[in-house]
Amino acid sequence: MFQKILVANRGEIALRVICACKELGIATVAVYSEADRNSLHVRFADEAVCIGPPRSSESYLNIPQVISAAEITNVDAIHPGYGFLSENANFAKVCEASEITFIGPRPEVIEMMGEKDRARREMKSQGLPTIPGSDGVVEGEEQLAKEADRIGFPLILKAAAGGGGRGMRVVRNKQELLPAYQTARSEAQQAFGTPDVYMEKFLEHPRHIELQVLGDQHGKVIHLGERECSIQRRHQKLVEESPSPAIDAKRRKELGARVVKALEAIGYTNAGTVEFLMDTDGSIYFIEMNTRIQVEHPVTEFVTSVDLVKSQIRIAAGEKMENAVGEMHFTGHSIECRINAEDPETFVPSAGRITTFQAPGGTGVRVDSAAYSGAVIPPYYDSLVAKLIVKGRDRAEAIGRMKRALEMFVIEGIKTSIPLQRRILAHPDFAAGKLDTHFIEKLINTNGK
Ligand code: ADP
Image (tube, rainbow, N blue to C red; front, side, top):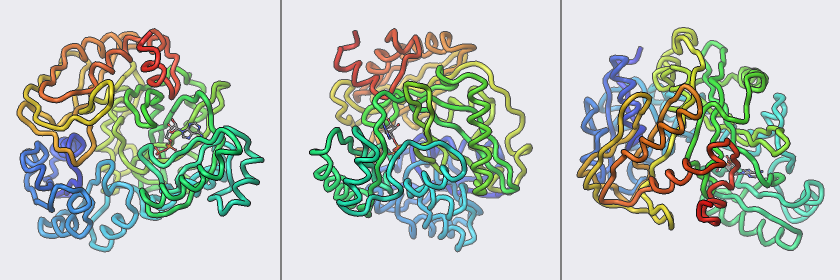
């Protein structure tokens, strides 16, 4: 097992990884930017190294700085968390070259899944259904027109290197096609450094369903059930749950078996999430795979009793699946609300000092957060302040528990999305499990009615 791990991240996920290391008896090194001197991940790690100015490009994304910190503190492994360098194949390669274990899949696999059109083709060839779309990247106007004719409208243009809900453009008719293609290409170039885009049929009212997987280094892959993440705003998830009200045990078993087979075929290792869209007729299509731990992993931990981050570490250290994961059984229902520092109506980010932070507790409630009374939310990073996760014996109990936990969560000094989360949880369609990715839009447009 590793002696010491560097956590190349900040905020709640850095703390989450530190918790896992402490429980495994592994020493930790935090890295931090000048804006994060007073952060909890710095306080709770055994050692901490400042890696640069507040801007992430100069600190958390600065590979030479992170690697130097790892070398001077003599760590065996690096956990990248999510975001930042977690899906950067080059970083994983540099770790390997420096003889530091990267806690994640092999660089080639990260690379393959990072090129979304390639991932799509690969998973299709391994037997997973994909949304009808272009055969790879759309090269030029002629192919654009031809493929659009074949696929039909509406369709969606997606940046091949996209992520985080960015770089997507819906096209409703022929007139919009060429201008949308040109804008999508230049936006993709700007945001991701490559103009490549591909095309998919646009599903009007899909549900977002994803499968959590783990693969060990001995060829074994398992799935840990699904999460439903249909409650999104601008393709960013706000509420997640497991299991999905739209998946029954038979479907879970079938889908799980197909995913496991596909991932074993490509030699997938460590934690990952295979994302699908479910159409209104119940058909399920692969859209992409994330090769890292996800923000919403705690709902899976609640319903399976598996510690996913500890499993990641044990797998990276070479342990076999049975040992790394322990016993798994699905029980109950779990929901997570992402509490963001933002205005609940305008969604404008709300950085600043938190004057009061009083988290709820009690049976079946978990709060993953690096916030505290007096902490400052800097403007440089994402706006997640806390994740509120509950477990109930069934969905109805989980909803009731989440409602009371949201009511008892006091965050003052900044604006948060708690009022919006309360409206979501109180909505009859949410209670009925009638979800799709336009839920929030509809909620806002109808003012919650
Ligand atoms: P990212 O890598 O940026 O997260 P994804 O491909 O995972 O992008 O898509 C994010 C979200 O965008 C999905 O959860 C869904 O809401 C929406 N979306 C993506 N593809 C389609 C599609 N073909 N039809 C309808 N909505 C889509």
